[in-house]
Length: 409
Image (tube, rainbow, N blue to C red; front, side, top):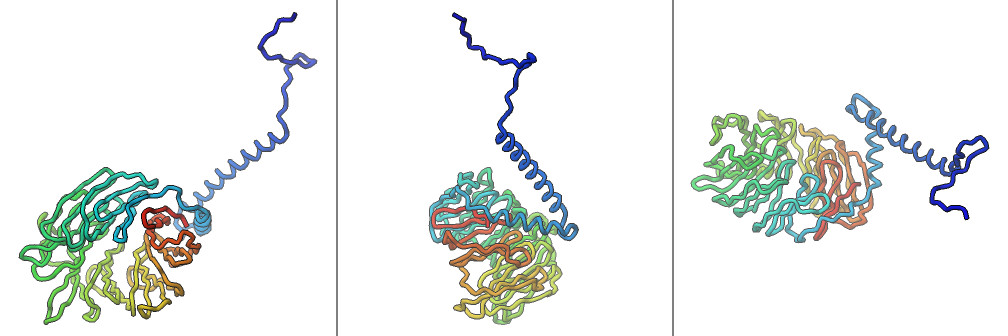
């Protein structure tokens, strides 16, 4: 019998060479389509990068590329990962890094984009307030004495001020302006760096400090005061040059004193813009000032419902009456000039802005407007969300009772 073997049998051709079996035509066709598609994607990506690498004013074709990028992103769904937390009506939320910071009545937690806890602190907050910057997260108890500063690595500062907290603010560099009550003074302003290190303190002997903000470069501070003048409660803003601080308190006179009209009421919030101008928000108006105290413009409203600060200015939603369904959205530049406006014929449930976008939520839709107030997206509110948190990159968090989802319109 012939000896068997496991070696493969190789058939030879008549010329003594090995026969090579040709691949099927369908296989060759699929391989060709795959490689063609791969190179098309690569070349297309390089083309879009070339189009958008310059500013819009220098390269008009980049407008097409940006619109194409937006339309492609509109196809994305909400993320599959849920950020789960203890739900409560008084919870405070803020975007941080790629994830979300959540402050409940007894706990501060920072989550990453897939819902993992990266840092937490268990404290008691009766009136929880939460602020965030690209560098850190600040949680404090308005009217209380709980004050916690964290970053992605852990707790940076955990102290209890001697007197109750009035308010606090956080600029883009993560520097802190903390306002508290003070013994023998009306108010105390404490300025700290992004890690909680003390820079200086300022005691206000005659006026209460309602709000305090730092400039984007942390070199200036704007303080809103309230006090009795001529038997009336009046408000004003003082702007200080922090580079004149001696390390303990501000020295010298303020760089400017801003006085909104007496009929405006008190300045409830100050907005320190990137360009250097200051906006004073009152109950029914916003006044726009230069750093030297010159009034640039003023916008008046019958009823101011909400506003958001974006890269080009302030988007203000207002109405003629408190109960009116019809409202309008106005975008003012940081000099107070009106950029554009649009009429809203539906009840707005929530408004949120950040970066180049401002988003409005109704019971039926989620509308996204760009930095010039052009409508970029109008999609059904299929998740029935009633609260959102806009992020600078154009995505947003949909906030529900006990969880949040990242949404890309």
